[in-house]
Amino acid sequence: MGRRFDCSDLDQRAEGLIEAATAVRRGELVVLPTDTVYGIGADAFMPPAVTALLDAKGRGREMPPPVLVGTVRAATALVDDLGPYGQDLIDAFWPGPLTLVCRANRALSWDLGDTKGTVAVRMPLHPVALDLLKETGPMAVSSANRSGAPAATTAEEAQEQLGDSVAVYLDGGKTTDNTPSTILDLTTAVPRMLRRGAIPVEKLRGIIGYVATDD
Image (cartoon, rainbow, N blue to C red; front, side, top):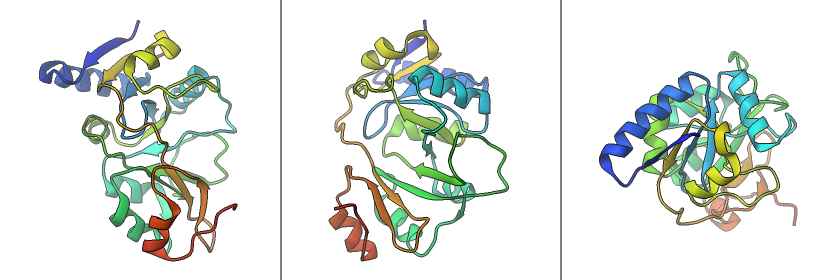
């Protein structure tokens, strides 16, 4: 059974972060709190670990996980180009619930699934997540649930769904907002919203002007 650490206790938080970072380096899976819902994560540069993540969720390669980062510098190293709008969006909304889809850096050796040469990247606004990401580097992270089931808003809910497939659970309490991140595609000439989420389209347009939607 994966170990669960209560991050409201400073000693357990410190121990849990060490155990989680060690597990990630071994290619194991961890569950962490974010500013939206709990996530299940793995080292983004270990293909077997990413495959294990998809297997734990019951998801195929056609749905590659996003990548969470602890710093803006880490994000820019993953992408080929932020385009004319990426930096302004990062300055306005990161860390926070905005996922940016960009062309991936072609020099990187990784396999997140059928990405079609793109990567979805985000810097979450949660101290436990950021502390872990600064230790591990970029992590492939998807919502901590079995595919088709409700996203976990507590570590206990995540553990009920994912069980022994996860080595370490970092318990940050109930998430304050289970609205998913907004996903914005920057790979086209006009930024396109792929998923409505915590940041409304009006706020995005206030920063970069026109944003295409499916409405």
